Length: 349
Image 1 (cartoon, rainbow, N blue to C red):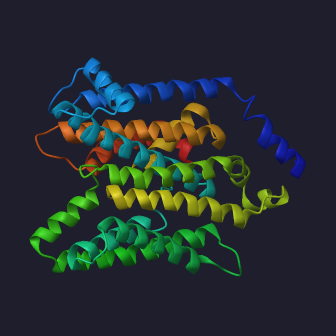
Image 2 (cartoon, rainbow, N blue to C red):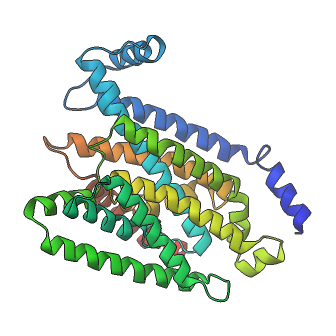
Image 3 (cartoon, rainbow, N blue to C red):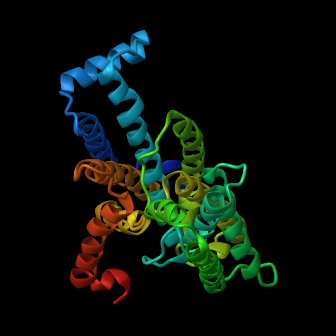
């Protein structure tokens, strides 16, 4: 397969590809739509579906926004749902990319230290009350952690995957140690706030957060999807990809920056939410296979659906707010245990 073959591969099968995979993606998009409306209805104050549809129609078409029900739907539940969609899309898409680049199904978006770096930034904002928002510092330090990881792993102009992973573990451990120090010296109130943030949650969702995260996630996802066919080739191995004309270092850098950016923005706004970027890509891969042109959009849809379901459980399972990271862990761990026991060869066993 030469460069011309690669261009043909990129341009043809997107339009005339496997219809079953396309139909599967459409079906899961329909499921996502159903889950969205169900989540709007469900809560401490149940709202019938016809009231939800009428309220949304009045708000979107006529810009009419008045009353308690309208406030609950538009300013509380929809903001959480949109934030959940953005976070689920970013984490699951990043998981697909990281697993494809590293060619390892057990890699997840936090492997390069973005979560530890973001936690350090959040701890700084909580303990020292800097004149910057917690979300801004979490995003900045999350990106700095990955930048430090990438810089440390460069060897003679190359970035070996093993070195990159080890550098990520080192940087992540360093930031985690500093967060532990902050937890030790912080007051009880500061500690509670930090621990609750570390567990993840969408309880503080506002339209301002939506306006920040949606453009970043959309742009990042588009970049990832446009390079998904190159990720298919890269998954064959770097030497094989180079022989086929792929500039592997450039492609890896684009993929890593894009996936890390959408992960960092999600962590900064929702805290550390585990298992999504590890579990969802596996589930999607079992349905549509390893072709990233189909795997990436299906993972995004399934990740968004999973996050909405988990957030709905988190806000309705008790009178208080349960951190969403606990819910994703409870649901995610048994699924991966099932894969481990029933599909050992899937993990190379």
